[in-house]
Structures are given as structure tokens and as C-alpha cells.
Image (cartoon, rainbow, N blue to C red; front, side, top):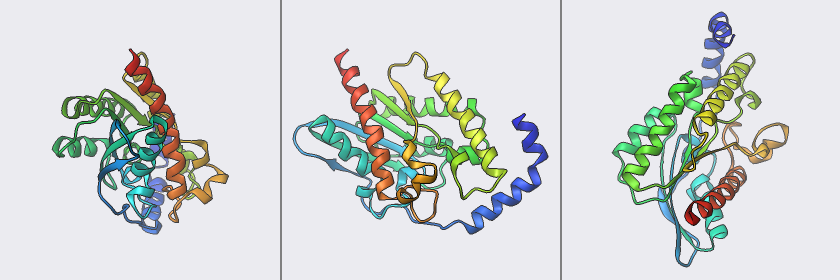
Length: 245
């Protein structure tokens, strides 16, 4: 059904995609170091974040206000200690790009990997099965190169709820994003060292405008705070459970 619709609507979808790219407000990645320490006291966690423009903090002025900083701060509070974090992210990256980036980067040891990827894979219409495999490969590479023990994958955002995308492009992107999330969820069944976390509902829908950046696509500083808190709550719970076994 989805493939038939994609073929039938191909000329319109191509035109709409070009229009969106032409009209979109292009914001820079958040400024500042790509590694640091949050909190105080004994080291509680070492965090590695791999992502695209959302991971790189587009929509925030500094990394302290972006996903990496917000997440590390939230984890430091929950774990009552210090959190070392490292960010590997770039605007436009697909998961395949992120794999290559991670393979070539100098990495500090890490306990937990967080991935913030999938939007560019959705735009490129990467197959859900291929995407889930690439996300698994990211986890395996982080285990091999940084010693990661647990990975939390941020789900692809609900692109059907992005008001700046015109119809039917919005419907197509949203349907593909949901297929990708379902495939990733199925691939994680029975795994205790990996999980998936949906985007907080505050960050999509009619009430999300005040949390978003001026481009309407990326979170602003308050949006990153909401996202970071959601991820931190899940990581803290799963990490404590993993350490107790």
C-alpha cells in the first residue's frame, strides 16, 4: 500500500520535498565542546551520544542547552553523582553516516550509548529492516570501541505530526517513520542491553510550539530539556537494574 502510494505520488512528493528544503530555515549546530562533565561528586556514569542534527543540538545556542548537556545534567541529578559525556553528531547524518563517523572518532570509555537518529533515514526512505540492522551495528560498535553496556535508542519522531510538512509528504514520512519504529521495537524484543524510547508527547502536536526552535523542526532549549529528562528517567531506571544483576 505504502509503496504503491509512493510511486503514484512520486512527482508531487519530489516537488514538495524540494520546496521544503528550499524554504526551511537553516539553523547552526549548538556551539561548544563535544564532551564534558555534568554534576559533581563521584563518577556515576559515562555517556556516549550519537546523532544527527537533533543530537548535534540544532535549535539551541550551546551544547549545555542542547540534548547532550540536558541529558547529562538530568542523569547527574538522578544518579547523584557526576556524568561524563561525549557527543558524536552531525547535521544531515543518516544512521549509515553515523556508523562511519563513530568508527573513525576518538572515543572515551562509555557505559551507556544514546542514539538520536532516523529522520534522515526516513527522508531517504531507508528500509525499516536495514535501519534496525544499522542501529544494532551502532550498538555493537560502541560496545567494541567504548565498552558500552547499555544502549537507548530514541525513536524516530512522529513525522505525521510535523505541521510544516505539506500533505501528502507529511503522511508518507509519518507512515514510514512508524514502520521504522515498529521494526526497531521488534528487533529489541528479549534484549536487556538495549531499549527504545519514544519522543515525549510534549514535543509534537499543537501544544509543542513553545518548545520548538524557530525552524519548526528541531527542539529549542526547553524542548531539549523535556527530551533529555525523558531519556534520563529511562536510562537511570534501566542502568540501576542492569548494575544490580
